[in-house]
Image (cartoon, rainbow, N blue to C red; front, side, top):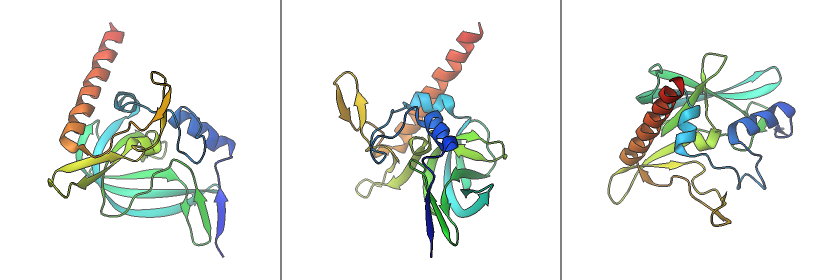
Amino acid sequence: MTKRVNIRSSTRLSGLVLLFFGTVFVAKGTTFARLSISQISQAAGAIARAQCVANTVVEVSGEIWTLTTFDVRETWRGAVPARITVRLLGGTTRNLTSHVAGIPRFRPGEQVILFLAGTKHGDFSVVSWQQGTFRIQRDRGTGEEIASQDTGAYLTFDPASRRFVANGAVRMPVALFHAQVTSANEGTIKGALERAH
């Protein structure tokens, strides 16, 4: 019999959720503080286009982690090796399942764009979890590569209109998305140089 554990209420996880999302999920993870591409870029140590190779689930000090191996196809920012491991909370072992809201999961063979942060283990995590995860597909009509953010359809509160709207990246051409990331990176570097002077 599989035992299901929900870690969302733990103190350590609450801290992580606040760190990565800037707010707590309100009702099944559908409303949260949206981070811009620029904000996610500023928080990322590296940005890479990668292909998922495999997932391994491990238990460390009573917590379940999924370690996903990726082959890096392109590096958009920073320096990463040709093969990386992404470490994220939760997963399923032989008799235990741990689910954490907002954590992305990856399928072998799929291509993604990841905003990465290094961990103390020498591997990586994904900045803002689902917000820092963009899935690549090919448009059936045009054949063009498109990227969709895992949280692209999630609702966020827009103070200007005082409404909840879905304004994440959905079906964005990868070339256009790459240009936006490059622009955000240049802005981050310029800002850092200006602060240094």
